[in-house]
Length: 118
Image (cartoon, rainbow, N blue to C red):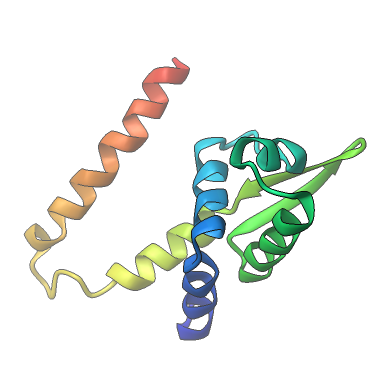
């Protein structure tokens, strides 16, 4: 990931509705969610949602796949990881204990999801 890619991704998330859409998609990984269901859950007009999804897709943060008559949207967690790693790449300055709080904050989130699926 380079500066331009990170700026594009962060710019896409720098708007309340798009941030809400992205967070909803992250919560619904790995299955994704249909566009109509996103609109319903977030109480958005379909044309407004379409515009926001287009921006998120162009940024690389969201992917779509047609299933029958629906379009399923998913968070691109590889892109999210790349942005996060880009931002935190030099966080510890050679002192790993500086990054430990960040890592420790992320691990429980993932473990809770694994426990829920077990």
